[in-house]
Length: 340
Ligand code: 13P
Image (tube, rainbow, N blue to C red; front, side, top):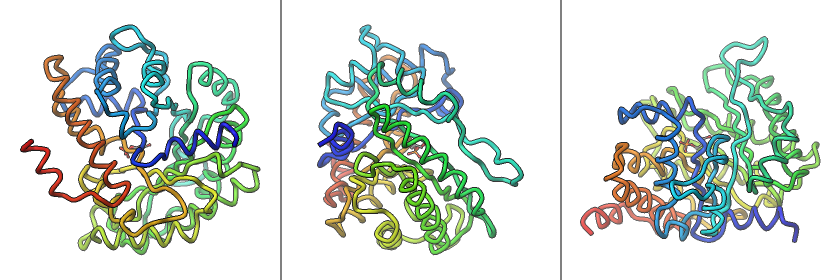
């Protein structure tokens, strides 16, 4: 089996998922603002060091997505972060897109940039230890959006990125995120997510991408966050699975969800509900940012004396999501951990 296939499978190994710690400098500033911490390079390094050195978390975490600054940084003990992760059997990954920018001649829609020079950046990242990458496109739901123009332009860019990754020996995670802000119904989220995935897999096929060496990182199909009557976990699982069964080829080894704006416990419960209805043609796993980190960031609060508390909170969320990989999570497990 090719290295790409092996890496993709290892990232969705039983009971394991991915930590997305690839917040750009702008995004990590927002996260630090929530605890009143200044976003300096040293603080960013200390925070990532806390997460990556969490004892035993590699039982639940297969890979970590890094940001350009982080893949070049070293842990507090001097070990380069990619080396530290690899020494624990955790696969280093890298965010390679350069953000969603306004789409020309469109209103309120974006296209993700970063293709220019990507071939040489991928070569450098591979030399720095990266074995997988991420590219995120975003789509907003309104009465009339997203447009076909936005859907196809982003699908084309995602496929160009994926082809360049495979040429460089890097597994592409393709991330088409249909944003769930708004008052839309779960049916509307379903239809938009179906259209987005359909365009994506058409472009991936046309651009000769080997799906066995890719992973999909989609949104879950949800009611809008501001909708009045929001669907529960069973409906989220049913609509999401219906969408993926119809639009994601079985050659894709794994679907690794983003958490979007869901609470950490909702993100776990929804993943669990989907896996409880398995087995499925692909592994259903997680690649959460906020849903793995939020309680940890709060417990750490930017203070060296809280590193252990921050690590305990991260370890706990990783363990809960690992249980959700096999449909064995129950909300009572959250309370047991608190009293333990
Ligand atoms: P969230 O889980 O916080 O949505 O982040 C995942 C991610 O990598 C978004 O690109």
